[in-house]
Image (cartoon, rainbow, N blue to C red; front, side, top):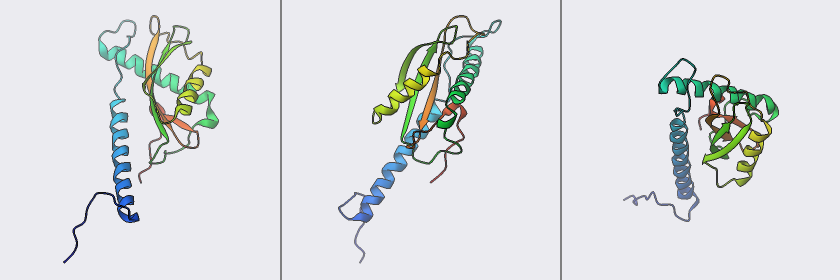
Length: 169
């Protein structure tokens, strides 16, 4: 008669590895859900002559792409080329406010990678060093946009707006 198996990790190497695998798959699923949730852009403004949330969302999406290309242009050697590995070192969601001239006025973490404070500091330094951003000329006043930073253990990154995707396991 076979002994019953347990999904609870024990002190033997096999079940521990299985338990960790489950944990990593759960973590990856959670990150996927977070990234999917970040795909929707809140309404922060509108184009001249346009009205309603859709006009503001389109303007914000366009500006987010301009801002991401601006960061990439200033950090070419730090951009992860190709698809990211299945497990990232850190994922952070940062809201950036720029004034009508493109100067960074405020940074606000919506989800900071608290396990990697050095990444938080480096992302903030990178955004501030890229200032001024393209002026949000199609809007009156400031622009606030959000992007997700996908950080590899090598210190290279991609922004969700311009990501090349992620390899499977």
